[in-house]
Amino acid sequence: TTSPLSYFLAFIGAFIWAAYCTVTNKYARGFNGITVFVLLTGASLWVYYFLTPQPEMVFSTPVMIKLISAAFTLGFAYAAWNVGILHGNVTIMAVGSYFTPVLSSALAAVLLSAPLSFSFWQGALMVCGGSLLCWLATRRG
Image (cartoon, rainbow, N blue to C red):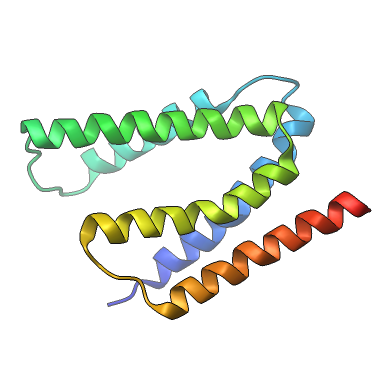
């Protein structure tokens, strides 16, 4: 089944993220607000967890390893992105950000032994190529 709410929230999230990345460099004045963002997100998710029926949590060693790995990976990724937004070249970051989902999909395909279709790779090359062309156009202008 599909959930229109999920698609709507993803759509809104894309706009919020774009707005955040656009205004952070201008208004942050060097302040890295990602810590506050992550803490508020975590708090809201815990509130949701306690207010809705949830399955029992199981804390085994493999689960804890995955949890800690995911926490460090996401924490580092958000921190690195925000430092790049505040102090880096946003154009180069934008080009690189188009390649990240491709790399993520390729890694997931390898880990899950799920081959990616030719049309996936075709689309990925077109998106990355388009991003590269946009970057080249901004360098000349």
